[in-house]
Image (cartoon, rainbow, N blue to C red; front, side, top):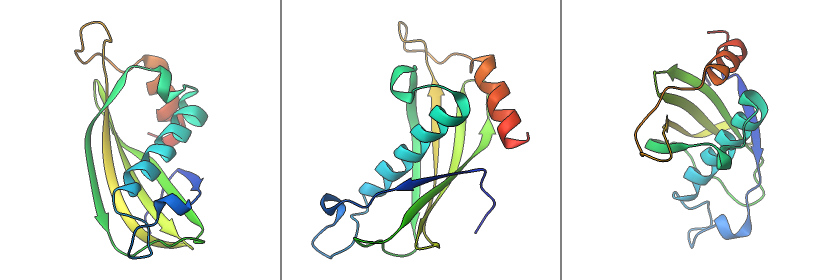
Length: 133
């Protein structure tokens, strides 16, 4: 396991389970989204649903299955702060073991034009302080 600065617990819901009896691979993206939302709320002091960002990239690598009843934690950290983008790295852990790893890139946009814009300085300061960058 890699060092991560943030962790969020995620509930495995019955609806997450597929016919094979484990969490469907598409649900992992939702788990990352829940951790990203918690990170923004707790570290950046922003509600991710109310800020102007878009998901530009998402990658997932699956290592093991997650099942109903497993204790799931998503570890997250900001891997890179660009001019307008925030790349985050993740580990989805089931019962303490890595079940998947992933990365996602959020881009800050101007809601009126749809174009990318600079990361707000307050966000940058909070992330850098929290991450020790």
